[in-house]
Length: 217
Length: 240
Image (cartoon, rainbow over all chains, first blue to last red; front, side):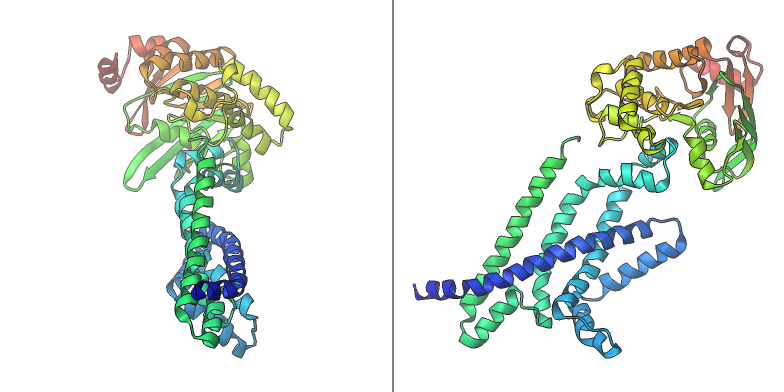
């Protein structure tokens, strides 16, 4: 009984952190999708320089651990005069890293569309850009939903890493409470449950979207 | 209206087209036959620049192909292409497929494109399938939508790349009859096909291709009754 009331008492603090967690996840997946689309288009481009730039990007941001990227952006960049708040550094790091993975997802999605689709679009007189925008990319939506849902959940969980650069998201809040009360079991258990609720929620949402887009197939 | 001069094309070590020359006049219906791998499809694909030729030139209606990118899209918009595997856009309804070219490429106003699209769908006998998705249509119906989609751009020439090869036998007739009507309306057409009945009935000229070359050409009567070349005879005896 006492345990429960202790958790309830501190729940608002954790929930405030959970709001930051959701903000971070939503921002970085949205921005990361734009970055990813750009990188994906570069990587399938016939222009060598774009292709190499895209590959270079993926090589860096997929190859360095996210935690190291975050610490680098927040703690190392200031020494060359580039400063961000902890929250900004977190969004930037997660966007860049998420973008690298999303680029691969989108690239695979585009490559999975039958070649005849591009040919049919071009044969109508469309430009490459028109064909991509009107014909190819819309067809990837449905195929992108499952891996994108996966990526969203991964990013949501990865937000816990930004506690290391002092962003007061869910895990950080739990740590702070534990530091003052020293009741780690209650706080970390509750934090874990909240993470699970969030990821479950996103799973359900993505399943709904997937079913909706199943229309024409 | 189409001049193909000394066209050559290789895929790696494979010499697909060897010095092909061909002239097609307005309103002419050309049927190209020949064994698979003879370069028929590649020739068609070069004519609307889905493949770039290695050498030689293609002049369509006075415009040389491949000079710059604007010229390519502009020329392509005047050439209708019908593919073996239809290549309809699966995320669009039949009508949306048909109006996509005019709306996106020609910037035709939506309502205008729709009413024209409906007329075309009627012309190919699918007035009742406007809002069906490709996956809800039979192969023959899909190919007729694909023909309507190509016609919506009001092309000067129609290219058909084995339009009935992917169809169940009982669906071939409906597609061929749409094509016959087109030919009767005076459309300039180049048709790659194995449908000898169609060639006999509709073609102005029949071309036989083998190993990247045009081996023989002539009116359907001469071509089928009296083939000159040994390889043509061998091919015809196998399929007739």
